[in-house]
Image (tube, rainbow, N blue to C red):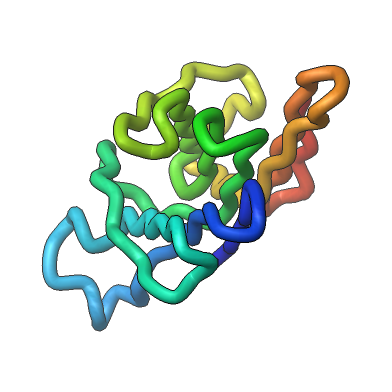
Length: 120
């Protein structure tokens, strides 16, 4: 699980339940969104259904989420719509990506993986 706030009130959390708690494939992709500082959270729809482990937003609109199966997701709508990004971060499609950050000045993004990958 990971949490990121773009400001004091707007934030997102990602994660995945363990296999025993998942009742369907959709349960493996969890993105939650708050607009009131974490008092209440709303689930956002995500496809494909994969476990997610890292999230980062530049502002209230532009964000990235990473996870299992070398997944990198991007949104320009605050999470209302997510799209899968093709990348060459790793040649192994089974690598789990664990974290993502984007430098606000340069716009360069960095992703880290479970096997020591660091991709720009």
